[in-house]
Image (cartoon, rainbow, N blue to C red; front, side, top):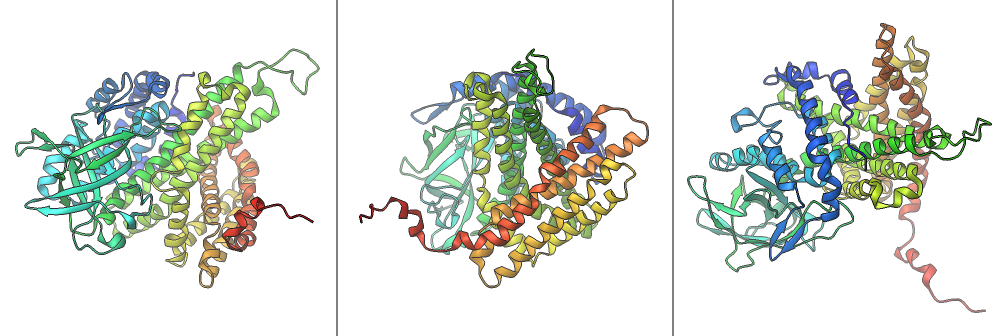
Length: 606
């Protein structure tokens, strides 16, 4: 099993040259960002490599254990969490008034990537604290903020979000958990499933944010409220009191992320009902929960990128060490490292190009989050919020789908050894698979992108982004660097094809909505491929300028080489994706459900 090494050079490049961290540092409250950036990257890398990475494979093998409602995490996790919390990593983007460091959301890009690459099973725990903090900060009352936020920021307590129920899955309109008023609080009764770190031994209290229905609430999503339900009740002086009526009924046995306890929680099992406190107004819980969900969706996209990069890094190391077959272009019979074989190089370049495109797109989206929250100019805030709204389903959907492909390709580099658990690459393949499922499947992200962000606003947001990419392609055309200039046409062609596919979806939505939505996932992936190429080519443009100025750092030449590979091996999918969307959508919805059973009917005799 290889030791994780963070791609600090690329992280630094993306932060400075593409996400514009120097400009982010000019926003109110972020003035110290550039002064601490390199130190944060270095410290985070050290923590990931020295603390989290050593318990990654052992945590996967040991897993979590459940016994009568008590969950025990793998060896070393409690100690790692204590160190993580004491180092202040949970409060990185949280305002200083709550004990946080007040740094931009942009800094979550590289830090989340490092935690998840080193140990995704561990990283899922503190990741949810940030969503809980943001939801309570925005919608909680003064007493709730005072009681819970500081403890969540310090890591003394952890947070969860409790949405899913056995009968509901992702369809939150079917949530049945009940909340009955009782004085200044409510009694919560119901069951939630798939709750990440819903029970564990790393902190003495867990603050559950729970979706439930009040008596007489409207049907569907309009009748859902949000409640704070602590595992242990909190006394008026902030100390811990009695155990609340919430119990872990079991943990799931999963394909991956085995060190992460995924829990079934019963509220009101003892009969009294768990005590909960309403957050904000009645029947606005789903709206509030979307604050946590959108934060989590961005984070899961970065999580997938992280595991993909870990798998790619692992594959490169193996390919350098594995000696097999002679060089196809040489008469020397001596076997060589497999990294010299063309097909292995193709796989590694495919992984590298996609990982770097995903990283750039994620970090640039995080930068827009900071502008949307902090810019003193309302027009700037609205523009960046529109970009974030468009990109969140792409960051969640495309990054996770592409990361699964990267991990699979990296495993293929290992050949038969990749299928053996001892090499470690199988764990990365297993771990990454959940990322396209939780926090909204790729299909849900695609429905959001096509239904809300494309059809509902008549394509205004998408059109603006595509026009911007088109203008950038013209900048590439004007480059003095021949390799960079050659990137212009592939990007322009792909952008045009994407725009035409979007227009086709919009036009068909007026007549046949099912057909227009049939290939929404391919459309999401298409948008991701183009947007990722846009950011990767921006990096190549910067690299060419550095080289022209006399900088001989091989990193810059590699940037151009990687972008060139992406142009011809990834963006080249554009024509096929357009054809799939425009010509293939009718075939998806044609016929009835019987088509899936006809091949299993009885034999027809002559």
